Length: 403
Ligand SMILES: *Cc1c(COP(=O)(O)O)cnc(C)c1O
Image (cartoon, rainbow, N blue to C red; front, side, top):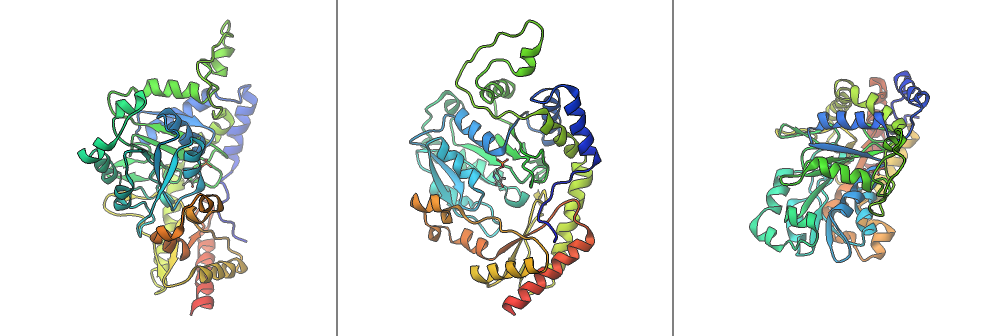
């Protein structure tokens, strides 16, 4: 069976983790700080804080911005549950918007969803293809939109407009107009979950790129405290001679990254650009070349004049099929010993959000994309031969079900 997304674990990774285990320091410490520095250089943002997951990072930033009951946050219907669940955690209202044919949230739908209660928009770089950040930013600074914004915390007053909090869980390493994911918006959050492009087993990073007069380094320090109980010293600082005394300055959260995780991330990041992304692109190109030859296939766009994907997952669509036919095709693919997936079941179709009153009929493009979509495996250790097996399995399955 060809698996969907196994992590790349080789001797280098194992050695890096062993080194950390033997070093005597396993929680947040020098490896995490080094990983943060390397991520900052890589993405070009102003500062980076590593955390235990993208989910924790997104929630921490909503809390930092003071999002709570009475506020609204715009989230694409077409995303993973984490993007919307964090809004629920904060007691704010999720306002779902529809996507375009490119799987990314639609600018027109955002425009229609903005009210005087909107505090944040969370664009999602689905499959690693960056959203139209210039379009979104021009929208939030339009005088008539900016006038609607009612700040209620010092951070909201300082920004004085809707915050664009990028869910960049898929897009580490992607490009948009000469800039990399991490610096495409004022705040972006990466995921290093086991199935993501760059993994630390579990983990995430908050990329800070806030405009003047925000002090990104000061915000980094404040978030560091917020992510560790509100304690004014981390474990490493406390371990220094005579530094035992500490204070709790707020009831903070607990979502720091460990040095064990960071040591995996350092190995991954070092070979990310020249090795991992190169292989991922080869696999994307092989799928594109093969499926472009089938009339029934709709191949995703993953490069254009402004953007380059991080090649996270290959979102193939089959033309003119129903959701039931798609499910049958997937069963047939599995019978051919290949694992595939669907990214995503739109959130208005999930029990919790359905019960909360959302209806998928309000998001027709998200539904259409979902109902015809099959995500194909993409990872470093997928060989050319395995790629050919995937192509044959999918083509055979489609031809069996629809032709
Ligand atoms: C994986 C994922 C997340 C959550 O990442 P974690 O690190 O597991 O918390 C958030 N958003 C999207 C779009 C994802 O795919």
